[in-house]
Image (cartoon, rainbow, N blue to C red; front, side, top):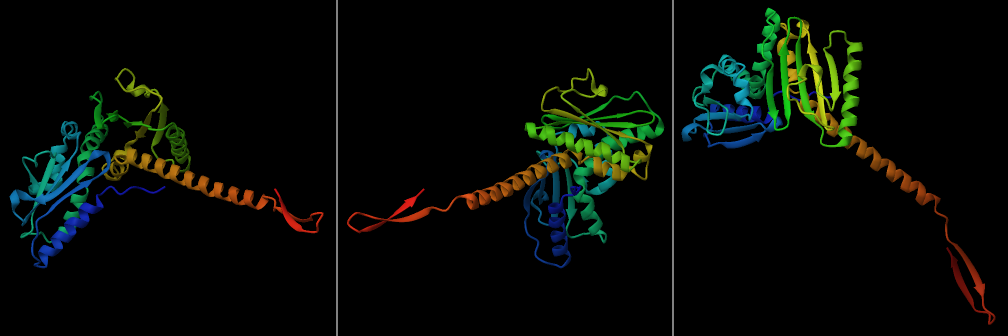
Length: 303
């Protein structure tokens, strides 16, 4: 299985070109680019207040208000500092502005950090509950992030663990079957690595942690639970944990689609082989020569 990139490659490439052109003294051109990402996220790269020398990067997350409740604003100030502008561009959640006439020496690191804008918005809720667990704080209200129209992320901290639950919707019945296979592989992976987090999967019904919470129930609903222990949430490991877990829903559905595409390609290839076998097994027509009473000949084709 492949891991999806946590950064937005198109965003990074666009900023790299803009910064390099500015440093080389090339003519500054107007910019207006809209990019799409997973979970309905949109990026907009444009000029700030019509000034071509000011490059603005904005991100739209439908669930940003929920992330703000868990410290997203403070985390973004920590990561982007003076580049963060208020208010954000109309219709967007967060905006960053860069001066093409005053590009910092470490602009390559800055580009990488901007490519992680979506990841850093997501990170706030995880960092908050990882710190609760580290300090032994219990009884905090569970975080509920409706990151898609019909799918939800739940995060809850206890003294010895952090529980992360993804609810997901399987559009097809086949996805449910394949999803169970994937979850079985995750459970088996714990045998190979004792440091891996515990992974649980429940179909139709929410796990016990979400009983009486209004979580959805249905034949196409699945719940994936990650039990993260201190070895996953400590200061040295938490960044990597956040990188991996915030992309899990997209990772799962990406591989479901890839698996179905692979199965379909194998079915088409096998069908083609069967057709060739049938064609080879078709009997050749028998041609016999007959004569009439007058001595004329004619050919009869037997089928």
